[in-house]
Length: 123
Image 1: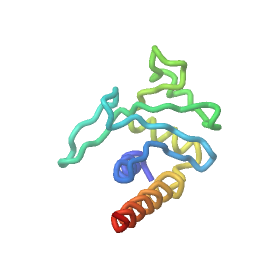
Image 2 (image 1 turned 120 degrees about the vertical axis):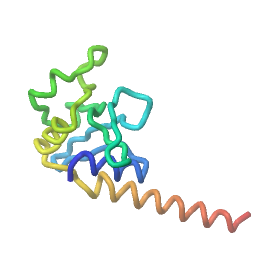
Image 3 (image 1 turned 90 degrees about the vertical axis):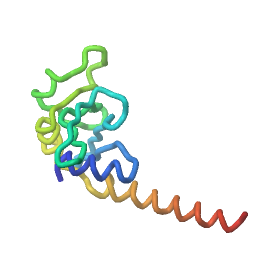
Image 4 (image 1 turned 30 degrees about the vertical axis):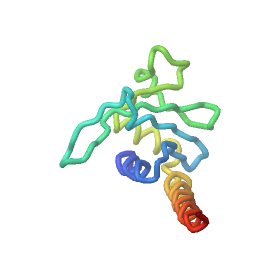
């Protein structure tokens, strides 16, 4: 799965963390009033540069290409990465763990909605 499809799925479930297969986590800040650059392609919003946090303590394998995209004000973990560099970073970390990234937040969202419906009967 590529980052473009992943962001599309994450927006549906209200999550912002990409879990990689080696245990690394990449925190996305897309969709907020932020530095992420997007454009419209066929009526869809596509993020071409993605503001993210890649923490070394999350076992993330950083690639040398991302250092030039580091934000000046940050502690060295904040980046604004082009989409192709983000895909390269994800591939170097084993790819996206689709269960933890998308399925688990989806199931939590569905369970919460179910509980809310059940609470309506109590009133």
